[in-house]
Image (cartoon, rainbow, N blue to C red; front, side, top):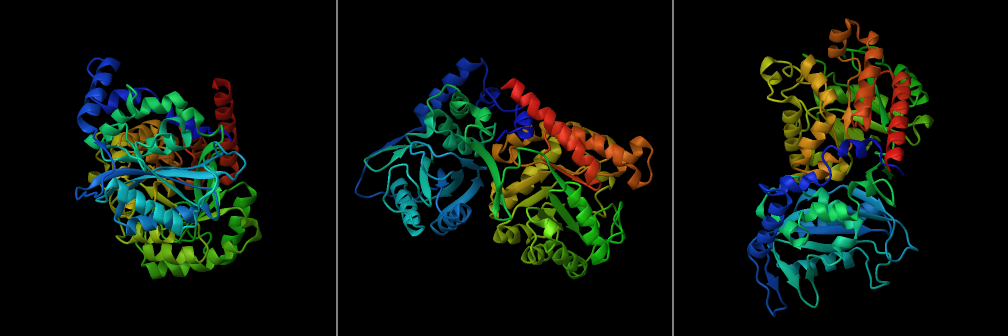
Length: 527
């Protein structure tokens, strides 16, 4: 399956220019070689088997995860939970990859990823803990490289090397395996965040560090073809979100939303609207019972649920919804919890968790994808002057999004279950909305400085009928802004958006199809 929109957006910041940003470079590649060589000498230590292993100092580790037997996503989740209970604190997650099997090819496809974490366990004790988790989840001795419910490998342990009869660190086959290198790269940022990460680059034995090792294998060009694609687990399936742009249709069951407030308050009218959107090509239906227009009054969770649940239950039971997804537009964790219990597949939180301290923990416990949007303040204050001050709106919004996403990740929501939204129309004026719309590659690039997994995450853009379109085109009535919305959606998709959130599904579905065709054509021509 081709990786189109995301691959093109990534080209702005993926590649060998990463090398220049990992270490201070004064004289180009020669200086990079010197810096990594020095790091290798200073930061690497060699271990041999010893009768007693004592390690009270906390170490940062990288653990690769794979599964191709049973419920692979469940196996991942169980392994992560057991790691956390075994004194391994997970701090970062890579993207999730579905890959063709290597070495022994007559077996099911694998899921692969990796995590960064910290532990006080010594390297051999850590190995023993991981082997115990594998056994507990059903792994038995079998064919080498054959099927397994879970596979856990230590890729890095602090800045150390280990070479014993039972353990080799760095893992000896990292450099030949794209399904290991891709998630490993995801756990990094373009800017090395600490000395341990710099040591991992030095241990790659490549002058340009891990980024050069990845590029030598083929790098980002491998993703989306050759049996490896990024996927997001949702609704009991793996969603290959980068193959084609998805259309999210908006349904507001509110009396006061800026575009369609009051139109779909009854269950019957809401179901009719959803049926129309699905017929026009919607992939996702986004249900909201709390208006987030500027100066909107804030409902209690109970009031929101009273509006939402009858419509959600009716939409969930529509025959046309088979194979489609339902997202819930809410910033209340109580609403998210109840909605998911009634059949919702995703939570779309305009606050990124800022308006409800329990949101991240609730979403983590539910195990569903989470849409994290950038906004300052709340709907009643977001357009206040102090919330519209940016040095650079793309850079600042990306940095603030990173903070929200990192908080969500620490709370237990894996990066492979997150979708990012730069928040067009939220805490931005007209010029800033234009900058965001034109600057999607820059936003990915800025996020990539801190986390390549998050830079690779699905990107959602929602310009539909927003006020800035009316100000530019002289359209005071929201419903008259559909042509401008089509233009904005076109710009977003060509800039790397993977999901567009719209009111008029039919016209924007056509725009998305054309954009995807152009992107497919460009990628096929350039390959």
